[in-house]
Length: 118
Length: 117
Image (cartoon, rainbow over the protein chains, first blue to last red):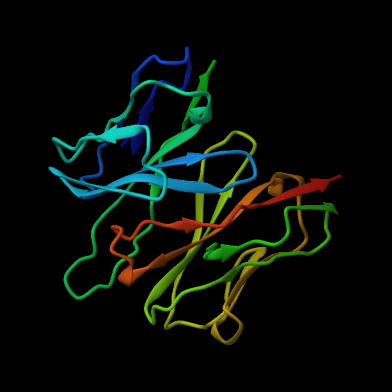
C-alpha cells in the first residue's frame, strides 16, 4: 500500500517555465489537497478536491491550476513559474465522512516535492 | 487572521526534560477538529492525534499527552522525558466543519523542538 505518492521529489525551474507536480493515492480517498510549505510559515492550502471532477481554491491558489479526472490522481500545474513559488509542496488525501459522521478525517501526506525557481 | 497560533517558534531542551508545546486556536464553529502533526528532519508529515470539539478528555499515548481546554481555546502537547528522536517541527492544525473547504486543515506555523543529549 503506497499511500500518497508525489513526483518529482526535487525540481529546479527557470522563471517562466511550466511544470506539473504529480500526486497519486491508492487508498480510494475522495478528498485530496495541495499545500505549500515555506520556512517558518506552516502549510498553506493551495487547492482541494472533494471528488473526481470537483476542485476548488484554497488560501493561496494564484499561479496554480489543478484537475481531478480520477479519484486517484490530483496533479498541480504551475504556469509561468516565479521565484515566489519556490517552496516545498505537499499533496494529501483523506476519506470523506461516512454517514452519521461529521468531517475532518486524518490527512495522509505524501513525502513532498521541493521546487526551486531561479 | 491566523486561526491557529503556535507562539513558540523554537524550543531547545536537554534529553529527559519534559516539554510542552502550546497551541491556541480561533473558531466560531461549534463542531471542529484539532490535530497535531510531527515533521522530523527527513521532511515527512506524521499524524499524531485528532480530537473533536466535543471531547475534552485529556489523552496520553506513551510519553505524549494532550490537554484540550475549550475555555481557553487551547490544545497543548506535552512530551515527557524527551528524547533526541523527538527533535522535529510540530504542527497544530484546525479543521472547521462549517468552513466549506473539504475539511482541509488550517495549520499553525509550527514549533521547532530540538532535544540535545
